[in-house]
Length: 271
Image 1 (tube, rainbow, N blue to C red):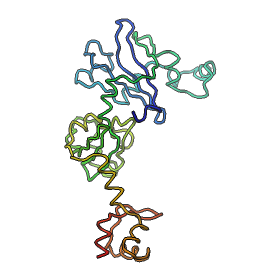
Image 2: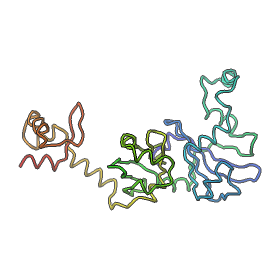
Image 3: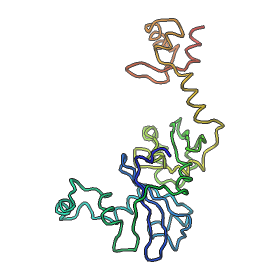
Image 4: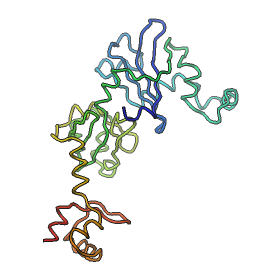
């Protein structure tokens, strides 16, 4: 699966009750964590930090809560003798991952520990099929989401009513325009700190009967740069620039190195 080569995988176990808790995923490039909990957990067997999620039937832990779980199990960065600890372990800088590997994720508050593995559990692979590969930020409040299972959905974000701070996004167009795919496709993030989970987007979105291949074909065959537009219209770049100034031809994207145009719009101006 795409992205596995840049991801580290750790299974989480509870030694006292001999129970598999889930899998911790670490994305190296983004320095970000995601925990996938076992579907077998209930509110009684789930770790305290995750009880509220499990009660709601949520088994993919958001990245901020996953990171909190990691932080609870490592030496804090603000510890007074942290430089001495780094030197002892031959670390140049503070790194949560290194510390959680050294301790195998153990802490005094519970009996959990982690084991590194190269095998992604099948249930995690299955869940990842509903992660996001691409997103298009449309006119607020709509987002177009492309999922791993090749589903494409148009999502009205006003339907994601229980997402924390989402009102801020919907009432601020500049903030809304910052939307992009977050770590591992587990969410869309706005300004890197307001996340809408992929499973929520999948649940709230309206299916569009297209595939990613269809979308790519459209881009490949119907988006033209300035040179291609000149060739199609048999005119010079100066002619194109004049049409743009007169608003006869409107670029869909403007860049210093050249604009992009819809083929249909270019054809209209060649008739």
